[in-house]
Image (tube, rainbow, N blue to C red):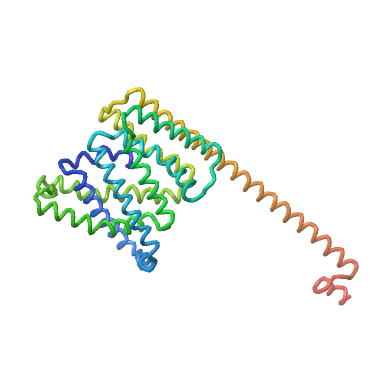
Length: 322
């Protein structure tokens, strides 16, 4: 669903990117609020309101995801689908770089190599485009920042989206009312189909997130990480095959470097996951053997003690009775 977003947002024209973004914020809040009312999960909201630091992080998350959504909608409707897809290919590399710079995480050599190749790709693409790929960079950095904020807030998928869109709701509603007062709103002027499509932005936003949350508890994290590459792959294919965007050789070279970096990163992650699994298995087997040996040593000792009459308690009782 995320990968097919480039096919959905052009359907909302002639609404501009700002109007589409405001409707996406407003209707997303309506959808997730309805879901939470049905499942009766509101306790987290009171706890969040009593924690100003977490609430501030949610506000930052709402701000950066607003930037992400707005730039993405504008890019898709302005003929920059391929460059938008590049942002989500670069995103894992930006996330790793943020971990080093902000969280002081240590990288393995393969991760350093992937980040280096990613930086080389940005240079090549800058030469190819004749400018930095700013759409890709804004999307990558805003989504990486969003992920960092969500990690710190530690809320569930639906709950965090509800909190973020609750913060977005009033500004979005105010902007739409302002557009209506100016006569620039398309919500009611382009027919019922257009109105329904704008209202559907809430479902389009919430449904993939709900599916992602359901998948996260059912499949291994490594598999989930690999599946997330499908979204930018589909977006890239939409840009090339459906929208027929230009791909001169230097752009292919830049994308090739990005894909090489992701291959290195994925291979390293899978290797590390397998090695960790083997280590856990070895430790568990060692602990089981040690426990068995301890039990084996204990049983003969107790038997010997009974034979010589040196044990106490129930072991000594038969001897007393005899």
